[in-house]
Every structure is written in structure tokens, then in C-alpha cells.
Image 1 (spheres, rainbow, N blue to C red):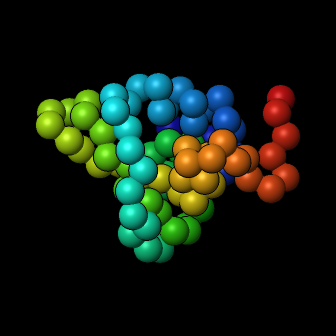
Image 2 (image 1 turned 135 degrees about the vertical axis):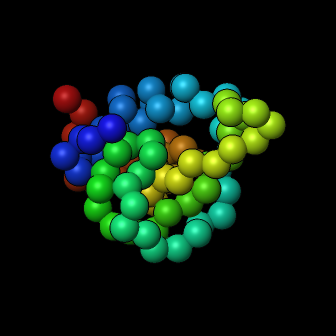
Image 3 (image 1 turned 60 degrees about the vertical axis):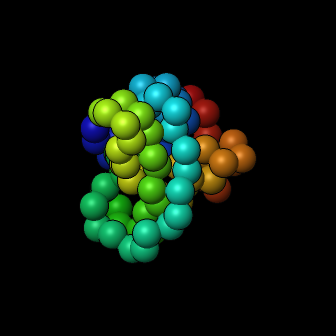
Length: 82
């Protein structure tokens, strides 16, 4: 899912809605791999998101912006709703 590196709450909300019993986990460090929730391809810190979609439990990885949005509803600095 590409989004041209622009964070979008609607995209993240859809990705989270598709995950059953999603839970935010520990930060796993820097990665050049994209975020599985918002689709950004920029490098940065990634966090585990554990869910129960593909069997007992699986993990996807999200960027810090998505982790903060998941945890508190905080949107990234400079984010403007369309």
C-alpha cells in the first residue's frame, strides 16, 4: 500500500480495522522497510503490532506516527485532514 509518504488517518484507521485484536508492542528499532499501516516508505523507528488475523497471533510493523496515533489518537505534526 503506497501513499507517497504522506500520513493519512483514514488509511491508518482502515488498516487497524482490518486487524483483529490489535495491540501495540515494543519499539524494534530503525528500519528502511515501510510501515504496514500507513504505507510510508521512509526509514524510521518501527513498532510491533500484534494481531490475531492469521492464526493465533501475528505481527506487523508500524512507524512511530502510527504507533502514537494508535496509543493516544495523536496525529503527526503538520497533518491536515482532507
